[in-house]
Image (cartoon, rainbow, N blue to C red; front, side, top):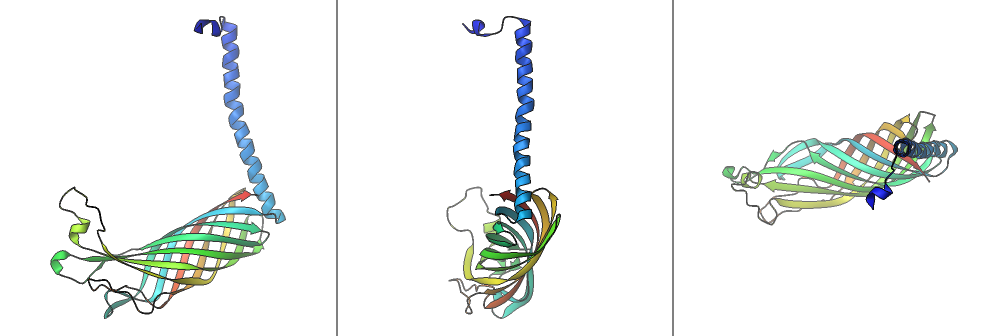
Length: 252
C-alpha cells in the first residue's frame, strides 16, 4: 500500500525534489516580503503622522546624588548612590504625540554592612521598582533621527533587604520554605520631565538615549522592622535616570 503511493520512476522523484526546493526557497521569501512590507508601513506611519506603536527596551543607571541613604540606622547615613537599571516601555504615537507606560527595575551596585552581631556578617542591599505612565512630544523629526521631550507620573517601590552569612551561604543543600532575608518595602510617587533622542538604524528599528529627572516622594517617617532595621530612604528624593534605548516600531 505504501509503495503504491510513492513515485515509481526517476522523473517523478526529480519533480518532487524540484517542488520541495522551490517551496523551501519561496516560503522564506514570502515571509521576508511580509516583514519588509510591515517595515515599510511603519516608516510610512512615522513619516505621515499615522498611528503606530513602539516597544522600547532600555538599560542604564539611576542616580540619587543628594539622597540621604541610611543602611544601618538613622544616625549612620551616606549621601548619594548609583544603581544599575533595566526597563521596558510601550508607546502609542500619532504624529509628534505619544502616550505610553513603562516598567523599570534597578539594583544597587554595592552591599553595605548592617548592624548586628559581627559573627552574623549581616549585609544590606536595596532594589527599586518603578511603574509609570508617560507623555512624549517629538519636537524634531528627520528621516534618520528624532528628538523628544517627555513627562512621567507613576509609583516607585524601594525594597531594603538584610541577610546574614548563613542566608547567603547555607550550610546544607536543603532549602527551607520561607523568606531568607528581613525586608522592608517603601512605596511612593514618582514624577518629572525628560529628554531623549533616537537614530533609525533600519526601517523600523532604532537606537537612542534618554535622560530624565524625577521627584520621588516616599514616607517621611521610615518604616522599622521588628529587628530594629530602618528603611534606608525616606522623604523627597531627586532621581536622575540615564539610559540607552533600543526601539522597534509596529504600524497599526
